[in-house]
Image (tube, rainbow, N blue to C red; front, top):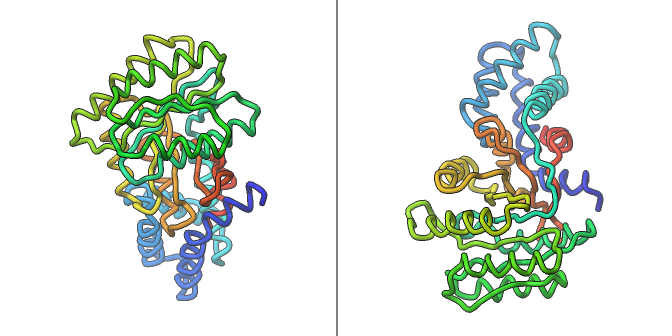
Length: 298
């Protein structure tokens, strides 16, 4: 399945929700104040966010004054143009090598599975990859990552459960330097901002990487579950208080009609979505492409 088709499938529920409701809305009449109010509600319900939805509708209103928008297709195309322009104004990340990528986030968002998929992705790009089992807090986390290492035929650095996570990362860095690894993927324990000890552990890992591997390109990517919608946004703020978040990996996009949360993330936090999960298989992760995303959103 091609990349464009995968993204289209992942956004199917979101797109159907938008299209159905916009078609219904336009069947009642003209683009008047009631139309714009109801459109704002539709965008908010798809988790684009209140402020972002209002900004988009204001832009649509301006565009409608300049161009005659009559059909639902006209409106969807205008919305695509507005969002495409929004995405074009935001900074993008191009991963440089050697790279250390720390995967962070709360419990249950799919961090370990995402790391397995990333290992497969980077190996398909002909990169040498090593996994670091930095989640020494959760029982069997290392075993789960080892299964992904076996599945993707990737080297893994690990210690026993309960070991110092920063020490495991130190071992990973030592190995990466010796083996000239292109990408070091670091798993970390799932945590909430209320777990101060685990948040401090993240800071310690960050310091170890900066001190021991200054020549690498370091990225902190937070994994967010698309099905949680706006709740995902508060996680960005909480983690950013402890380590600098460089980008977003959005999982479970195929299981929700709340794909609009991508727009809210980009608009409100000015953080790029770097990867999106498009399914359950090891190949089901893609570099985020804003044009393909917008084309498949409406």
